[in-house]
Amino acid sequence: HGLSRQHRFLVRDKLMEYDFFVAFEDDIRVTADHVVNFLEMSTQIDRMRRAAEHSPDGKARVEDALEDSRTVRGKSMDKATVGNDLVQDPMTADDLRRLWPGFIRAEVVDNRGEQPHPLLEGSPPALDNFKWKQFVPASMEYEQSFGTVDPNVCCDLDSPRTPTNPTKDDLVLWETDISATGVRHYPGEIGWAAAMPVEDKADVGSYWSGEGNAYNDPSFKRPRRVDALLGQQAGWMATRSQVLYFHEHACPGGFLPHFDGKDWYSDSLQTRNGAVEFWSGGFQLFGRCRLNRILSLDPKRFSRQILYHSSNNKQKTKTRDKFIRLSHFLGQLYTAKERALKSLQGETTQ
Image 1 (tube, one colour):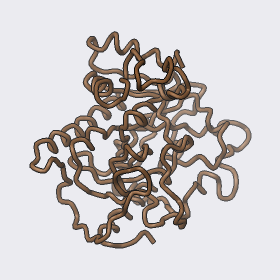
Image 2 (cartoon, one colour):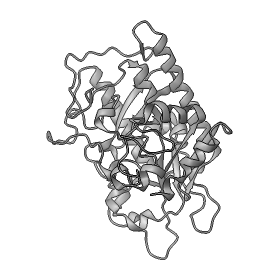
Image 3 (cartoon, one colour):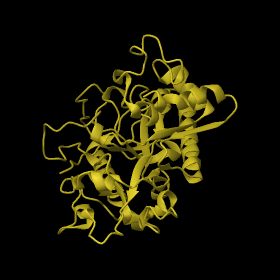
Image 4 (spheres, helix red, strand yellow):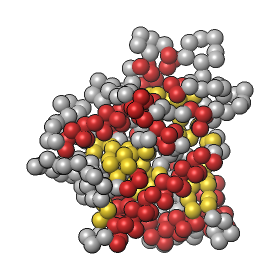
């Protein structure tokens, strides 16, 4: 744990010498496209935060929002302060301050061996029979309307260790699924985006994919801090001002050294404070610091929020049922979006 947090000391010491900081695990490929997209989305979020601060009621709204015909609104089923049915609701400055451009790891299916790849075997293959398909099918019409996932941004790596010239359907996800995800129409240029898993009490709200008993199980609750579904992004990036916000406002006990005081247990390296991923994977930000990660539903932006796990080895060690093509996952998000829009008319998921 000590090694995984050493970068925090470097960030502290160099904070006033640099404008931007990137800290990811050493097998994560981060490009200029990722950085530029992060900065653009951060600017869009901050613009709406300032708009909320200057509005008469302290809220930012979706322009040209659709009429909401719902007469009954959902209630929280856990410690969240909002229900799971927020589609285009106004957002306070504090809500927007906790919104954050997220990332998600992907691998490229490596089918170069003599034997068929396990994810491509069977009838149908595992990748065509992805989890929750029965309840939340992938609406692939988005590819005609908005474009496709671009595999070259994250994963076209010229290396003998990894497949070259990947296609959009070669990119796979294994660290979360649609059951832990929501969608929302955010104000301004942020637009439609997916809400990644977050602690219940930190949630600023979205339309959960399971709203309206979509999974045909009334007892099924929205997954929160479930390790297998958290969406490990293996690092973080931030401007100097964002790092200062983490340290001075968002994160109990601070984001930078020294890690002591009432918010830390013992020497702060105990597992009770967080595992390796707490420090190196960004889990502190998306847990204790209560930030809400979002993934744009615009395929161009979405492609720039995909990070290549260049070790490319999870497909060999994880069970097949964990994997889904990124293109199908985005299709499921579009299904959730369609259901969210129908809900405004008072229609149910079923």
